[in-house]
Length: 128
Image (tube, rainbow, N blue to C red; front, side, top):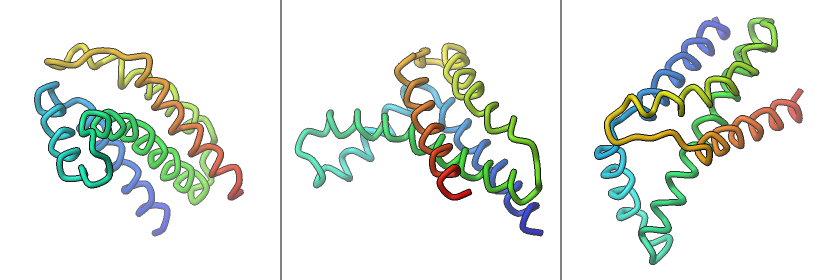
């Protein structure tokens, strides 16, 4: 039961983050600017806050994916290779952006995705 729940949550998170990642450029920009406006009490410069939120989104979404996948792997006694597949997906996710209106490939974003993966891997390693 725990494995099935974990697998379902992992799949839902993967679908959700991929859907978010492939929104058109205009919508994703509007959403992040609105969030920066709402959180403007954290920092006066909304542009800097917007930039930081967009960077954090990459790190956090991949960190959560690795953690969920690691939990699912442990509960199901699955092999480790799906964790490595997340690194590949984090590049593919960016590589498919040019297919979406107003989006582009960014090595910086791939690096942020990999940073999130690395933090997730480190946390899983520390918790083993």
